[in-house]
Length: 201
Image (cartoon, rainbow, N blue to C red; front, side, top):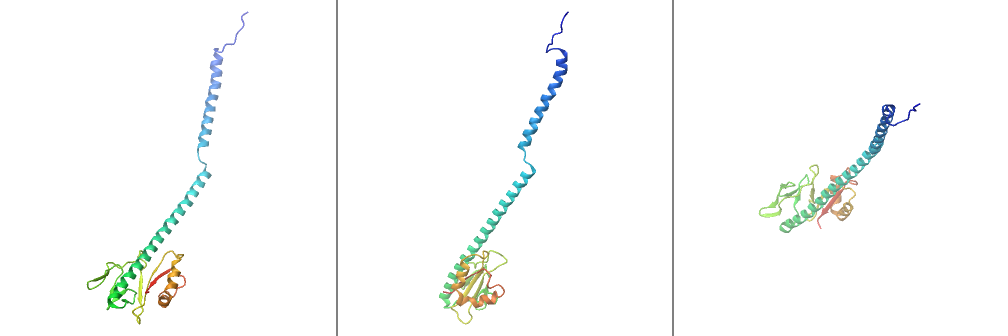
């Protein structure tokens, strides 16, 4: 009697087992692929955290940039006032008094007013080729001369950085000349306005 011997090549192994185990191996491969792709992807929470951090960093950078521009404009205002002091001193040397001031606090000479941003000259004497204007269109420099004393004047600008230490220093240095006119012009906010002042020596 011939006995049937199990051979791997028998039809039921190829037809049944290969159909059984081959899909299992393919399924395992797909599971591993899904796990790998899932581990490489960001979750919604992680994305929200990253976006929040980027938003905070962007706001910090914008604040620093804005503060830098304000300080740069304030530095320009201080420099403009110093140059104006030199021009006023040149005028004084020619006329033995500082120029008068208009009702809206501009430099004037014998009734002629000089606009900020215009040429400051008398006859052939040029004291300043261009009078400085405030870097912001919404603000302007101001000049006042004591109507009863041609040796006294006050010149000031509003700074944007109200924590600038030189604000109080400048006001203290010119308090005897400028305090009253500053109270008149800035009566509503005299104590808090960031006024930087220069005055006659």
